[in-house]
Image 1 (tube, rainbow, N blue to C red):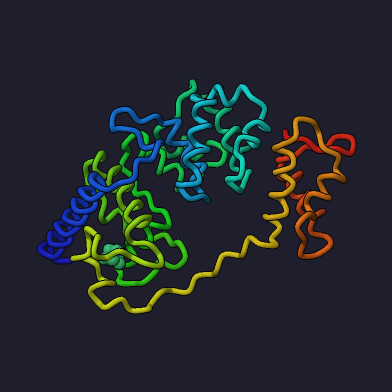
Image 2 (image 1 turned 180 degrees about the vertical axis):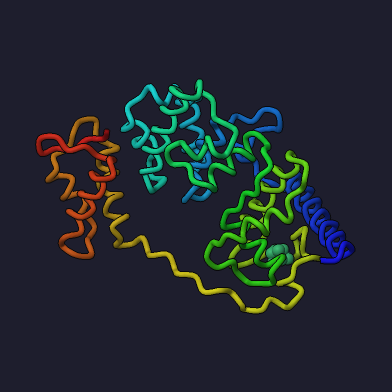
Length: 305
Ligand code: SF4
């Protein structure tokens, strides 16, 4: 690439980042885990990232607030039985995240002086933390400069940079694309990571992008080329209705609300309530929550761990 081309591209990336950050500072939703710069609680960031992995922010907010009131530090959570974390997870879904968060809290309390680490490799060694979450915590909690790319960010980049309607399946180059736009200053990089996600969540939405309110409309390749329907094919998410996940959820709801162990037969009956896809489904769901460690079987009964 000629030096003048590189200069032009860097200058455009700076303008895009400035526009997105400026918009974010004016328009971002107030979310309880964001805090003010200088008063960000890394534990709150880590808890929020676990909860947000598969769940929308609006559903996470009440659960997050109750969680942080009850367990304001890793050691306060670590001092309780893992089943309490599963119970408090409520209806957020994918309750293994609660078990993993509890295990991570134990690691933080016993091996890290009750502090959330700031470097990605140490974060990756904690239970339940993959590359996305490690980078998100390092960036949002500590302003370590890393590209953080979620589904919303990938959609913004697909449209803005590549002129594609949707991002398709995650790929290694997603991080390179984000890194090419990321400001050099780590604090602005943190803001840009959050701002790009927010833009995808509330303006550049999957179904109805609000281009008239978009701070990067002038640079958007997809808009500029007339919104071609050129989305890569993505496998559709399996429906929840009738799924094993739904049946597992019925068993977990019964146990969350029980103060005593529940007879296995009663748990299987609860699994079948409301209909099943096949006659083996209740047993399959029951066995899977037990093998995931979400329930413990003792003498024909089950209980939270
Ligand atoms: Fe998304 Fe429209 Fe903004 Fe392009 S102009 S990034 S499609 S909201």
